[in-house]
Length: 131
Image (cartoon, rainbow, N blue to C red; front, side, top):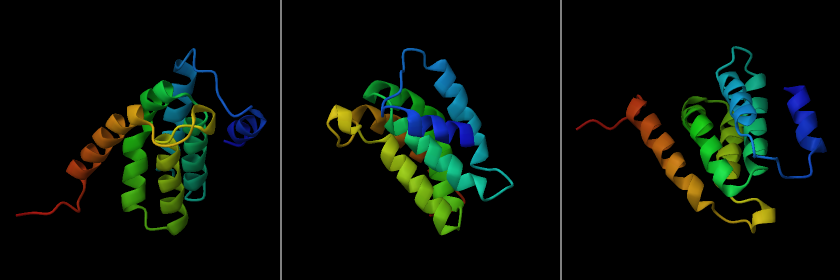
């Protein structure tokens, strides 16, 4: 994860998304770290996910978000540590916002996968309201 963090710091602020497969694989690996037994790695993984999502174009952000929105939402809802909750909320915000290079503001394309991820996590949640 240190290598990914260093690479993101060296990047010019936007990632090449002509080939999404390597980014998808990276996000899947980071997604697995959200449930790591070493709790200090979880917020680092969440922040890296947000950093990667914020450095992609709007269309790629929506596609990549499908991979990580659900687990980020799950961690934000269920992890009781403030540092993890905050890291996940920041990552979700970054993943649903356009980069400054694209004008900023909400990314309409990423909202649908976000809502799908949210609905999926609410269906599986133990916090469901029962009638």
